[in-house]
Image (cartoon, rainbow, N blue to C red; front, side, top):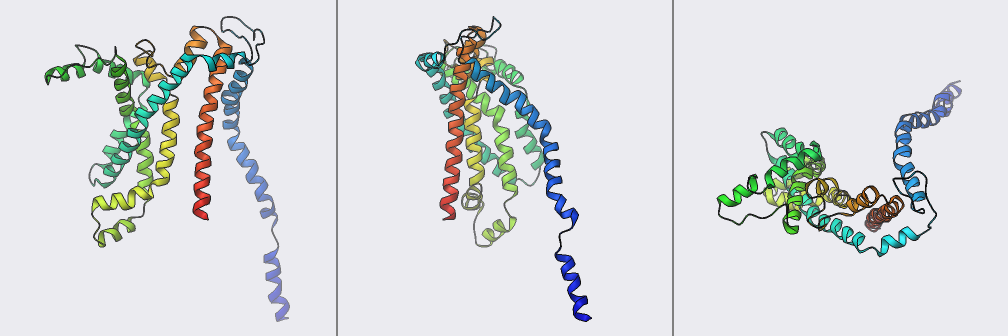
Length: 315
């Protein structure tokens, strides 16, 4: 009797209950229901326009007439690839990326480390660094226009007060790149700062305490502990910043309008001018898809590099 009684609970415990069998299916249904609104919005506003743009790129479509127009096949893609203005605009986007990505990564890391080591007013500094990021681009451009305006702007007055030649921030190519780069640094710096701040909070405090006991100073702790442990975050910040800089449009368009003489016009402004100013919808769609392929290729290369590093580390 004792043996039979002792084996029954074990057998009963090994049987899956009806609730356990239904749990995976119910979780999948709940997940689909919760993600359904996002999937619908993604299909309508991302996948849908992408498919429409791919179709339009094979036609001689214009934005002032209804319909797709005449079939031209790959002619639009051929014209885009042979257009020197397209590659000039592409170079401007790459140049802007080279100007903005390194300082936005380094400054965000530096200020995140400094803010994490401040004992008083830490919340204030975090809010102050992140606040410009939520300001609309039109407002940011208006602020910096008042700073850069010749004779009456803040920057020209400062240069004149110290006896330095006043740079032409709006009317020259070098001054335009300087103006838009400084504005972008002030405006978008907060996003990378928040990513680094969140990553620093995940670093165990015991690691710093052990390093301090071993005699490591603050600079040694930052160089030998903080920066190496933030390697994965830095990789994420770099690729996100590269993609964001390559997609630059609004600040250059509103501040400089691609000038002077289209010397700062990025590729997205080129696409905008082609499709909505010259009314060449099919040509603009082809240019858009070519640039989209470039962005996807950069993202795929970064993903492949991450997978290769992970595989090599595991081996």
